[in-house]
Amino acid sequence: MVLPEDSTNPIVEALNRIAENQEDTNALLAKIGGHYDAIVPVMKRNQIRAEDIHKESENSFTNQVKGIFANS
Image (cartoon, rainbow, N blue to C red; front, side, top):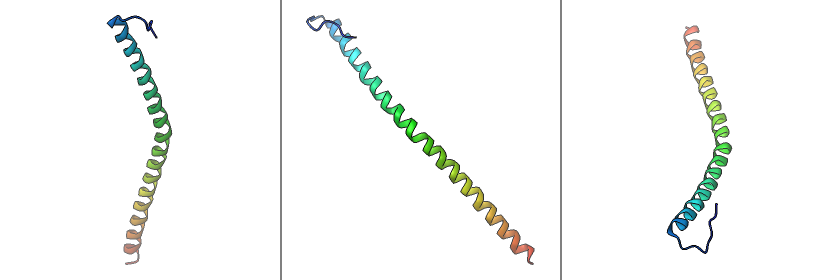
């Protein structure tokens, strides 16, 4: 929204600044959204991978301990 530039009305100037700020904010939010969409799936995949590795290591340790006592 752009109002006539030739006006020296302070209200028109304030509205123009508000409109420009809104456009800048929308552009910033679009960048944040793009970053979020690119990063979050990778973070989720890494979280699942780390949980799987942790569960596997717990199971391995438990089986090793059972093996020690089974041989006794």
